[in-house]
Image (cartoon, rainbow, N blue to C red; front, side):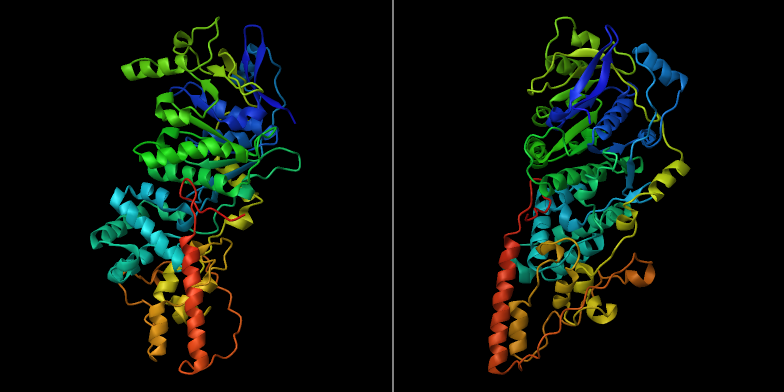
Length: 553
């Protein structure tokens, strides 16, 4: 495989401009006004990385990037472009592609659990105030410490309702949880459901390992997110991409400086990541961008103006491809000056003048050399890709999706027992799988592929109050379910649900000594000790820079 990618060519002298693969994980920036050639540049980058054995995750905002999955043709315009660059026509070829779609219509469903998303990104998605965001953090803490897997919005609504009914009891441990804040959260989740965002939350969640797949021919896979409809919900788009960035950082081990990255993440319309984002989130993105390089991940942001990206993040983007900018307004002029002032000078070129004169497919380019130093800026043309420039038809896309090797793992949703069923008591009353005690059912429900307290991976013991009730010979407060609560709708009877997999039955346990005997008292004390240890484990749950769950490796 090549140690670099020929991305551009300078017609004057027919000199090639190469991107050093060892520097691709030092991140990059692609800018330019509408219609200047950014999409073709993205396609050329994705194709080049794939040929070099590097997998790519990119966003298809308009649908025209999907042509990377089909071989190109000797179309007059494309063939003419190669001729102008003094290059022969290439061997037309498609790239291996996996299509993803949050809605599951134009590709394999892209999902994540609420627990894995974390409080920081969830608060951004719900557009919460600082006070409401603090309440969300408490809700995640409650779920983590009580072994309640919060996988989808149905689970989140159930958790909010359960905490609302017990706010006074929880106040001593978690502080004041005002009814107004909890009610506002419940409304925000309902509004989010109405936008169709609920399709993103659930299982099976995307595994990072599947993004790193390399074919038997040595080419990396181009994973493409169909984002046309997602653009109608810009906050959801931003959260999806930030969550993926956080997952890559938390899941991948340290790799140091590699000859080429493991994965390149290219985010189009990158300004959406930062629009109205709180400073804490911008700081988290900057730290993640700085540190994810050592995991073998390259982050390439694509946007119209370099001013769309905060300076703290902009400083992490070492490779630059600037298509034409228009200087019609003072803000446009500031963007032009920003490009000119942040490129390594070339005595033969005035970037401040050239950036406004570039034609379609031309760009001012400055990559990092093998030592990590910016090369002098050059005016060059992007070499067209060997794959199709233009969108796939619906039938062509369906063929690619249908032939996906990952379809068996992601095509069907799985709705295992989680917070909704545990709190409602459905496991005990209707599902027929798991323990009769809803709390014990929380242990069985944690048998999914995710682990950790908030994902049901920790055995959950009865509360101290339940043990005291048992010692008095009374029924525990948690028994009998919560099906009478108004926020538990019997959605299974009204709307067809995805495949429901019952939790595995717990192993049979020896017969217990009568509660009132000495053995029962000792057993209850032991259970209390285990419960205390479980809560301590929940308190030690650590989340990463972007709030995603940090795995123990």
